[in-house]
Amino acid sequence: MHGEEFGKKQGSEPYTWVLDPIDGTRSFIAGTMTWATLIALEFEDKPVIGVMHQPYVGETFYGTPEGAWLLRGAEKRRLKVNPAPDLAHAFGTTTAPHYYNTPEKAKFLNNMRAALRNIRYDADAYFFALLAAGHIDIALDADLQAYDIAPLIPIIEGAGGIVSTWDRKSARLGGDIIAAASRELYEEALALL
Image 1 (cartoon, rainbow, N blue to C red):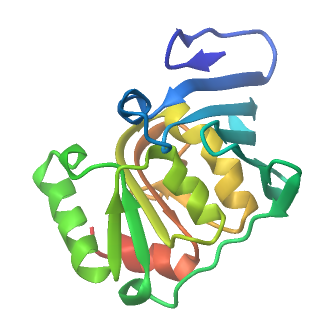
Image 2 (cartoon, rainbow, N blue to C red):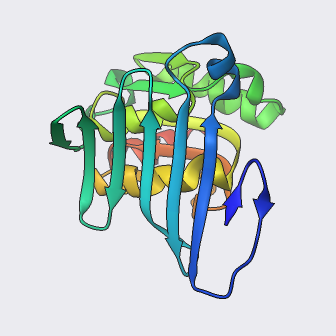
């Protein structure tokens, strides 16, 4: 098991549960709907099942190797990204500008602000789920932990999106993360680094 509240406990099997009971603690304390409970099941260090649950609105997003879905009450809807043609028409998101706390990170955020049609802040994991649902084109975050992103990877990829670190490595261990609704948006955004 690996989680924000209890660290990492190595087992003898190839499966690992990754848990973040309250992703977006500040949002939770403020009573906003953008915090979530995150759960992933990894097999041999690859997230294969991911779940993001937001109790306030009763939404559960989940992804598997077969795809990604949204559950809302009795409704079950398949998720599919809906990419804008380019960054100039794209909606982007990130948790907060103050996380871009080095000159390189601040420059990247400023470049993205200038390139995007619009950028929104302060929704933690929920923004990544909205990308999978086709509402957002680019989701960025700096300095994420593994338990912040591993549960979202199967959801994003199951919906047809791309997710990695800014240096194009696996997002599974966290770091500076980008998710995009298309390969074209992903490449255009990373060219601004």
